Length: 365
Ligand code: DNO
Image (tube, rainbow, N blue to C red; front, side, top):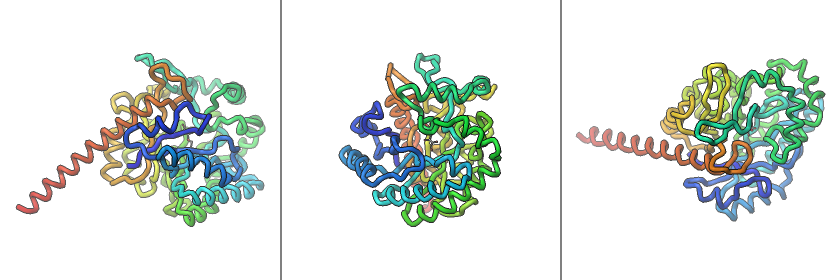
C-alpha cells in the first residue's frame, strides 16, 4: 500500500506540502489543476509547476484526482468529440510526467453531495452529514448558488460547472441510466487505448452517495455496476478508485467482497468510514472501524491479503481542534486516519510474517 494525501494546490489549500511530508509513510500528493474548467487540455507548463513543487517537498505526483469529464460527454452530445480529444491530450501530457493513475467520475452535474458540511458530533468535532429528507427538499440551483458564493467551493460543485444548472437539468431529463452507460462506453472506448499507451490507469470514482440524487441518473454505485464497468472495456487501464465511504453509505454494498473481486483493477483506494442511520442518513466519522458502519479493518485486511501495491489515501476527516479547512479536508483527522490505516496494515504484515515462519518451520519438521 502506497500512502498519499489529497492536496488542492498552492494558495488553494490550508495545508502545506511540508506538513504532508511529516505524516508518517506518506509518499505522494493526490492533485489536480483545480482552476481549469472541465474539458480543457491540461497544459504541460502547469503540470510541470506542480511537479516542481512536489519534488521540492520530496513527494510524488503519481495520482491525479480528478480530470473532470465535460457534461457534453456524459450527455452524449455531438460536441463531445472535441472534449474527448482534449481529454486524450491531457492523458498524454500527464503521462509525460510519470502520472500513473487518473481518478475521474461519471456523475451527472454534481460530484459528492451532503446536506451539512459541519454537523456537530458527540465529541464536539464536526463532520459532513447527509440527510435524505433534506435532499428531497433541496433546490439544487439554489444550493449551487450558495456554494459558489462562498470562498471554499466543493469539488464537483465548481462555479463553472454550475453556470447553467437549469439548462443542464433540462438536458438530463431525457437521459436514462442505459443512455449514461452508452455514453460512458463511448468515452472509454476512445480514451482507454491512450491511457494504455501512456501506462496510465483510468480509475473511476463511485457515485457519492451511491444512489441517484435530484432525479439525475447514477450508475457506478454497486458491485454489479463496477463489474459492468470493467466489462464495458476489458483493459488493465480501465480501473476503479475503490472509495469505501462512498460505497459504504449503502449497507447493501459489501466492500470487502469488492476488494476481493476487483483487486487487479484497483490501482487507487480512498479509505474512510461512515456511520449509517436506519432512515438512510449518514455521517462521516473517524476512520476507526468501531466509530462507523464500514468494516475498515476487514477492508484493510482484504487489501493486505491480496498483496495490494496500489495507492491509498485517507478520505474526508472530521474537523478537529478548531481547524479551519476545506470541508472534510483538514490535516488532523486525515493524518490520524493514515496512522490508523498503517496501524492495521503493519499488524497484518506482522501476522502474515509470523504465519510464514510457522509454515516454514513445519515444512522442515
Ligand atoms: C470527494 C471526492 C470526490 C472525488 C471525485 C472523483 O471528496 O472523493 O470529489 O474526487 O468524485 O472524480
